[in-house]
Image (cartoon, rainbow, N blue to C red; front, side, top):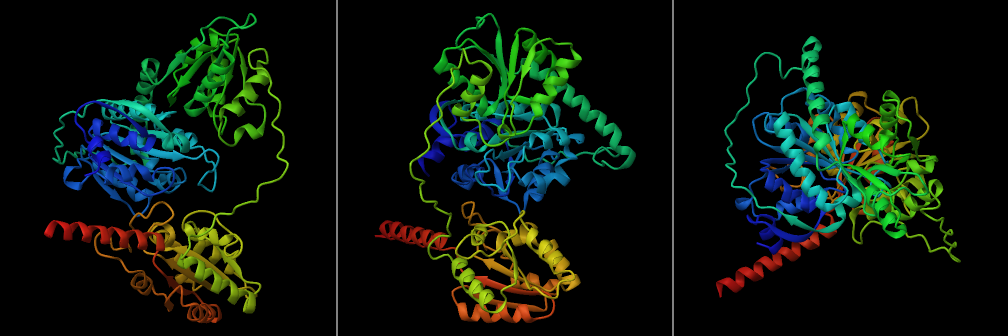
Length: 576
């Protein structure tokens, strides 16, 4: 077992340098989490890596990859209502997939406790948008915790899990990309001697787990009551705190304050460290529900307060409403420009904002000179040896020669990179699994231009099947190319239903045949002439056709081969 795994399950307290995603796992172990389910997506996959590196026989957490985020959420919910503390995690847009289930959960008693961990992505570092899931947390009536560092990830998860168990309600634990991936020296506690009792404790009387028609209202009242309890908890929570590193003396006769959260709070503190200004910072770790008493008290103690948050104007609107209702006279300052509603708030951006409001405290800095020469752009590329490269090269050549007006639709995965030069395959991209539905719509009433769409094998199972079924039912004039590389490659080679690493392999050709696909071909992506023949035949075929272009992910193939060689070498040395 590795030293990392040894430390992760070490029973006594210890101190170590750890990234946010890994600190979360240590907190899960110290909280007694029994079940964790997930679907891979950046910036969260390292959570799974930290769990899976612990040998299964020594791992107290039952962990599994789910087919998609909705199933992962339902798995964690099922474990929780059976009395087991559970966690589900996925990336920001994964919450969209889970929402049909997640929006009900706060009305139901999660008796074991349940924490929903999401990796939001200000700056769209690895996502198709910057969606602010604090909106969704309010829609779901889930309390929201927002750590701003790895050490806060650790401490706030402990608090969130305890609160969830106490109130029997799910909690949304919102991390962001740089919280997930930052590293910090953290003082960890001991892992208690948990019983890990798997006795099923589910018990229902009447319709307490049936949020339908008139049964909804008593459940909704209960959810509101639980949120009121969280609001009271927020007043004394260590996650909400006032920081005054340079004292609280007035600046030019004015008492100044900032209300903020997560990473922006640390950017503010860094600016204050540089300027030496005396400003109070109310750092909110619990950002929903807000405690009005806490907010009003802080506002009334200051002449001017700046509300700083990443992405949407959520805290701003709620704090303004609280101030209005309580007749607060404090001047409230907010981000002035739509550009401030995008990207991350690093210290340089925060300094520019603060200098606009309080130039005596934060002297405006000269704009950085433009570079004399632009650095050559370096587009993301598929890996050397990737089968998708070969497939796209062949299909691009075929389309240019024989179907120049063809419309191509992309999906989410490594193959999304085919949309870029030199292939430019897939000029429409929305979300996981959209390609078949969008292509089907493009084919309606269209007898002039061929439609080709792409999907990867992991996305095929995640969200691709409903669109495929629709195209089968209506026999759309669409060619679907399934790019099969036997893994969830883009997020770190996680297994899926057709990879053969979890249970019996579910074979994609057999699934398509069972769904009634009449035109179905399969070929190795490196056999370009044969692939072109199949694609041509499908595009000339009237109705829905599927071509599977298969080739193993070469990164995983080489790594697995190296691991097998190392294992063989170790075995031979033992047997000598």
